[in-house]
Image (cartoon, rainbow over all chains, first blue to last red; front, side):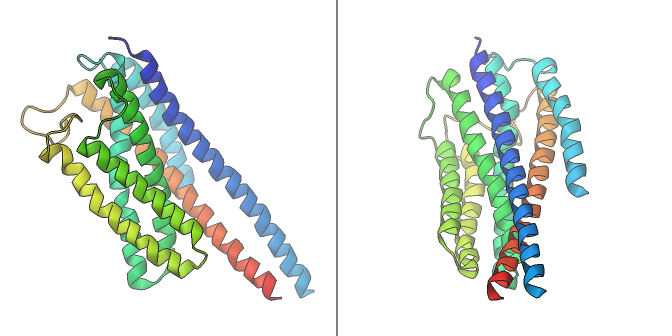
Length: 48
Length: 224
């Protein structure tokens, strides 16, 4: 019995899901850090 | 620092696990190469059930202390548990097709896993609809309890009921068990995936802290 396609499908799904989730985390982190800098700048400006 | 250590540990263990899966491990009798799905499906499914515990504990500690730190920890864990449950369902379905001839059967184990997935889906839907932080955290706790009720029943389902899902090979009846090569590969896969998901959790918690800081600063900017 050779079910190589099913095995490769499982392997691909697991690693693609982990890769996509890691990429989503990285892009979310980048967006939040930019927003954080922007807000800190706004606060500094308003205190001047 | 902890994130880096977990990242390095997963980078070190994952190639070893993949080598064992692809090269070292023998095929499981009668299943051909698709039997090797065991090394992706079983660690994912076990970790998915175990990950329910920190979600529940976080929810309970929030209800007792009202400290939002616990709610944050709980929903970050819930996100990883949701990812794990999704992968356990998908890898299970793809494994079932060549072995059972069907993608899905309404077997107690599979149905309970689907209920767990729906519980987490409900958890995140609820959180995205509720704007009030306190209410969000309190109502999330209900879903945390539901997931915690599901986990032990789900674990025992294949021990107490006759199911199409295979009987347990870990802590199963007398005569159950596996070859030493298969057991070694499964253990290393379990360790590698544990490090990987702990790494993802650590990153998710760090992001949640920044999200809260952004929320706080937005309120401060609006107030001025």
